[in-house]
Image (cartoon, rainbow over all chains, first blue to last red; front, side, top):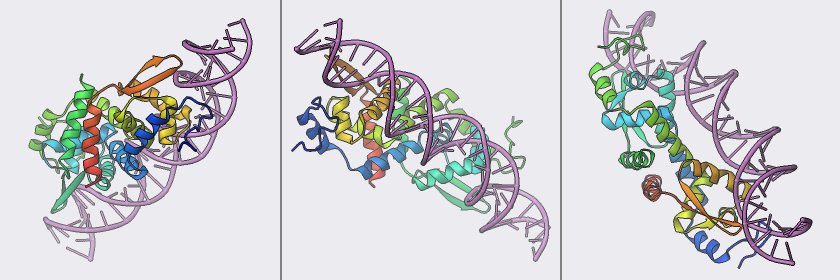
Length: 118
Length: 118
DNA sequence: GTCTCATATGATCAACTGTTCATATGTTTA
DNA sequence: TAAACATATGAACAGTTGATCATATGAGAC
């Protein structure tokens, strides 16, 4: 029952609590995916990009102007956000218009802002 | 009006869009704070800690057993989560019981899980 | 075709992150 | 008091990250 629970070698572990929480805990994969999502949101440049796209779609050049970063830096970050399925884009001639790929982002920002500004 | 907008040196910028988004954009400070919050959620160990605490309060030793990490590693991460006001603790004898400091976390996880598992 | 423009990509590098190990702190028990 | 214990803290080190610069791609204009 508690073969490998006493990994700290002593008796400070509450077996009942550990077992209860273990059952509720999600898998390693899900934990890693969740962490990757939050990590993608965990950079000021990307926060600004996503928040800007909350207002409307923008091209890379506009984004760079709005947030005050180089176009290369923005492009690199957009790539990361694309792989996390946070943004998508449509092409119009030479210009790529980026927009949010997901309506969860707005709610994540809402909750985050509440936490930060309280 | 657009003195410093044409930072890319060319004419790909949509001034109206840039100005509209700029007005909505939050301050640098808020962006950094938000990014720090999400960064704190952006690590598998911390995700597991927080998710475990969603079920019930736990001591450091229990947390280490549940998520399969060293107590030192857990303690270091708890410190970070404390500075971000994500967890708090109460002392009972030698043991420190940690719990969530904030009900936003549950909703952040909900939204995050929806995004990840869709 | 060639040129220009908007964006993407690759390499590089300093800064940061998370773990481990060793040690310190503060609490209980003997 | 000393010893045992739960946890915190500091140093150190490999691994990762984000910006920059240089270069590549792909589309429209000529």
